[in-house]
Image 1 (cartoon, helix red, strand yellow):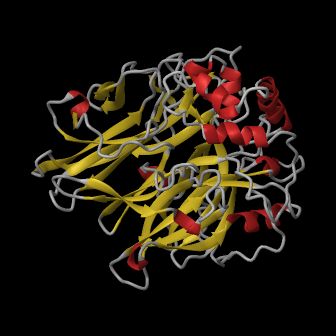
Image 2 (cartoon, helix red, strand yellow):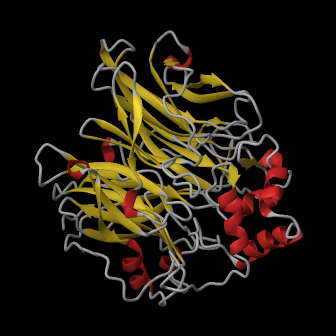
Image 3 (spheres, one colour):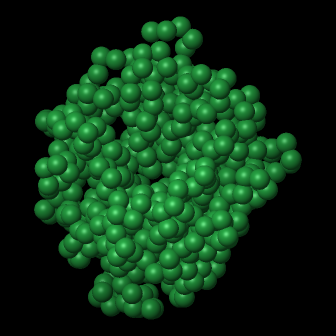
Length: 539
């Protein structure tokens, strides 16, 4: 099996990569890789490569480093092409696929009517430029909406304000800049609102304290691993330093999440860093940003991205990308709580015995276990294999494919047998929602497919989302505005985030969503935020 792609690589990109590799062909790959790997850590950073174009082409998983596996994949991809062998290509659509596609008869959330809620390239009421290539997160916090807008693969010929956070303070209010980070950064890798109910000793706070926190990269606060925390009273963002760092290796804080230790009773915030480490901290009103971090990581030495996290049955889990030449370095991990916590390796997911390439597991989320009342299962999306999967902690974390994304969407858009067909769903999360009229409890799972529908109808340039019902059945929705034809190649591409409106005026009838996938740039003004509204007439 050839190593799977994180994206469908275009012939232009393949030519760029292979053209660079052909210059190096007379030298052994390992030796040439070692020449770039100046600090000998088994990875090449952008600074070490000295060639931004080449680096972006090979950094397939966008974690800020190139591994030998990514370099080797690019070499094997010589020649490109748009079709593959359905029997051997992990990204190929198979017309005779037998994976499950349980469809729901419910119309809940399938009739959302979308309108564009923000236009990139415009200025806010204070005259600040709002633009970007991706909207990575939309988060409800303190009665407002906040959106992380990034500039990865931004057109270098256009003004670049840097990544930042936008805010919308009411249902009828426009978006405006809340904070802007340095232009050398490419994105706000995570934005989340966390509620602390205890202090660092486990003592219950008089009132829970909710903090809006954003991840940062190595260019925002050089020499440190730092997160940014919003001070709601001062309308300002404060750096919260986790630990100093040395060396040129790039990193970003990709995940921030909260977990209550089952033994100590302490609410802990965790920061997962692309350098392969996980740090933890506690609420401390006297500390900068009100977080006191442990400088030593709880988990370290991961060779690939920590892709997602989840909490089920009171246990905290991490999904780490699999590294082909380092068995057990990636996979599913569970935290063993206590005064001396540790992360135990559970296994590689999805019975992936032949793990060439990486297996991106996204959106780990807890769902009720109907077979064991009071217990929970883990739901996740496996990008490379194109499925939504259930992991059962009650059965030794046994995996089960629940929904075949590639079979469903390939059939929906008329993909040809053997055609390379990428499905990316649950970029960041699976969003729980309750239908305001029927009371149905669902998970909204945003994403995109490549290639999509053809034609001039705006729906051919839409993004997609799935509605997962509590019975494990699914429905499909499209994000598009009939009045707007997206100018970017691929249209809206992908929905990266969905958020239920916090505004009372919306009465639970509105979902905000943001996206675009800025791979294969440059791009300009391709980030988007749409507002989806349910009809006032009950179904």
